[in-house]
Image 1 (cartoon, rainbow, N blue to C red):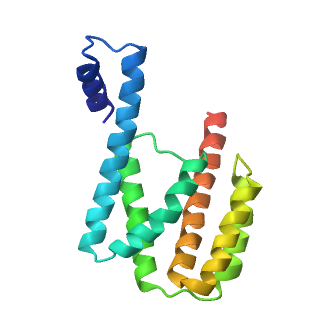
Image 2 (image 1 turned 120 degrees about the vertical axis):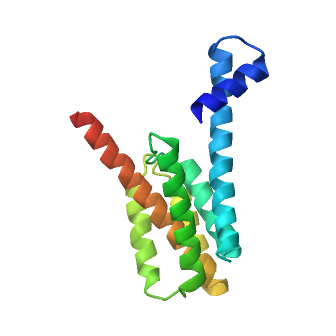
Image 3 (image 1 turned 180 degrees about the vertical axis):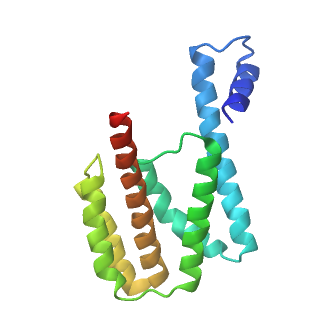
Length: 172
């Protein structure tokens, strides 16, 4: 994907070599291409599995939280592509087939504490907003409640992955 985005950047800038401007364009193109390809693949799989509604509900909550926090990133696109699609489809299927149970309520609040504690940003307002949305969703739509729980869970797992990665890099 990196090579493709570099070639596209060279084509767009009509440059013959990679300079700073071409590298910035290449980086942006790579982010757009990888995100689009991953999202499109997950969407097509959700269409096939008849869980498109759940796909959208999960992503409405997952993506804004994911974008705001520094967490685990795979070194290779194919690893990220496979893991991201598995995670999105797994969460979409959970939303489709598992009913929200009140036992999930304390789990979310515990996860929110862990989420806040693991976060580099430690944004109290964001954590409170998530807790508020979750609490309000309990009165409206249990699918949304479960989507928030899954979004916080997946982001917490990704933050744990970041910490694990940082620990292993420091010991190398």
